[in-house]
Length: 434
Ligand code: SDX
View (tube, protein in one colour):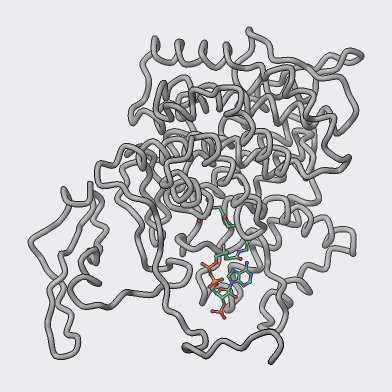
């Protein structure tokens, strides 16, 4: 795919008295890159770029981000349009297939999701063997990794019926998430219903009970659709890059995504939404003195970071955090919550931080994780499941990237180079002489 976007322009590199020319690539939205695929062959040199701050791993036509302008597009559609007008399943279809579904396609996709909503009853018993208090993210990655054993054809033919594999995963992860919550409470499982939409089904499986039927609230269903859409994809973030890295070894979709779930778990990545809520609760419980935390975040000798702020790509507002912040007010109103002290606290922190030189100079703005937990908490979702919600939303993005990577005719196993800085060759010393 890269070759289609190679321009006539060249970058000149002078090395050891020799000048080499490297092709310039320009993407469809004007992103520019120096193509170094021939660098080592022509110069013997590699590049080094810890954390891949300046290094692109692939060309992709799934998601476009402009970090300076705060732009996020899935397959060319602005996130604001998708969040305002679509269901999560419509956007999942868009990410996976590259176009918005028509009515028939959407109906068929939804029916497929309904068909695959159950998990094998043997898998249900797996929950009985996780220790009480097991992390929902570790349960999720274990269950997803194990899922392929119930579909051996996935290993024989990983790209077999991708529509079915994608729909199966989208539907079963929702069920696994809800079942793990019910199991954590020791409550009876609530099975998926064929008459409910994707998000309504999830909320019903989470909160319905034989003794107190759950009343599905349309505002919460709408807000959950929006939240999952906003988490749908985000180009080569840590977990998506992990899915592509693991998938490049030609391992099946479910095993690749299980690896992505584990990457997302980290507090610097998807785990931040849980860490934000824990930080807000700690500040609130200790009297609300958030300035002390802001000062700690600025102290180079203090490892504490103001979770929910900063981003590798966005150097202005994360467009998703703006949409979520607005949805907070709608959800709280729908829940009859006049004011949420943690939301008020979050808004105060944002206001102070955005005027603080330390954060302004480093372009640190609220990211997708700063407000999302307020909504999940208002829905009744426990804090330790916030990152599971992130994973539910990110599934279509991971699936789309895995398919793109797998279908790349120039695709190869991902294997970065390194610069060795360890001991030079030394003489072996037998045990008796050490
Ligand atoms: C997600 O990549 C994606 O797209 C991710 C994501 C997605 O949708 O997949 O958007 C989801 O992961 C959002 C990010 C959630 N994580 C957090 O909220 C954790 C807190 N944020 C940071 O740890 C940090 O901002 C990162 C991890 C998000 C980004 O790290 P970078 O790009 O490696 O930036 P950096 O650590 O080099 O920070 C640059 C400077 C440093 O100061 P100096 O050394 O220049 O003096 O900014 C400082 C950092 O100390 N800094 C912070 C800070 N974030 C960065 N200081 C205080 N609080 C913070 N939150």
